[in-house]
Length: 119
Image (cartoon, rainbow, N blue to C red; front, side, top):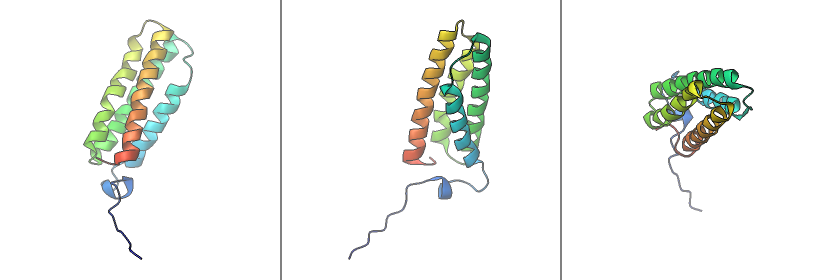
């Protein structure tokens, strides 16, 4: 019987710095995805939600940067700015489209997180 030992892919448990807030970053991604999946109830509510989501993503970005995950942190910069741009949209449909695009970028970031871990 041959046992092959391979180093596990860098992941949250051993790739992060102690007490850096990695779990807060992951929770922020989940929270943003949940918020983006809700229907836009109106223009003002959508604008406010966009600013809230941008704040959550900025927090996740900061957590991943503190943990030494620059690639992961950088992938969140674009969706955070996209969510923030919802505050200046002129219609509910434009806010909804912005949220759809932002959600797509967050899904890509989560896939990167699952595939590559902290990098």
